[in-house]
Length: 254
Ligand code: FES
Image (cartoon, rainbow, N blue to C red; front, side, top):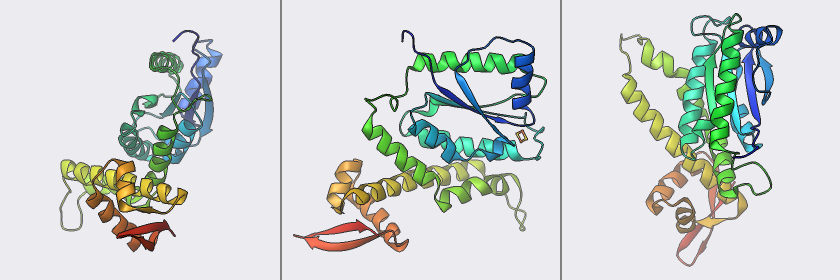
């Protein structure tokens, strides 16, 4: 795309990557000025919500940088960042925006590497073109899905799975058992899909009360799957039946 200058947001950890960016500056290393930086104390501080919010604001790309694995000043912050990022990418795959986010490591002495990574990412985003969520003609259906993703990622089920992944898969429990990674991935994928559907149902019901058939049509899934998720949402006291129209129960957001 001609003359497209991506708007990129960078989250840089204070101790390594921000210092690396600083070194790039004092060393007069040339790199594109497309990235605006927010300094965070650790890459693990970057809540997935920050990423989804940035994309909803129409940013073309988001780059998170932290200390190299093993060098985090809070010991395990970048391991946590990796797990959160893995979840973010999985959710973004639903809407094809997974290539607009990146996580990488830059140490305080890697000013040149910082410049190279920024240049590479800017070129990559240029090749993708502007975000479909930027400008006046933003894609409303994509925006709706991203809002559902943001909500789904914040549920306690997803947060608990991300927070406990390493404990479950890398360390043994008190019985000396480890949960196999492939089994965990299966569980995780299922949770991600379920919570995405549930968050979408809630957003639809916030607009207007609806029947299961209508929800199934909008979500492009089977009515039986909508019903299963409505049952769960009812159990969480997030939806309720308001009336019966003909033979169809109508549900509302509580
Ligand atoms: S302090 Fe840099 S990643 Fe944790």
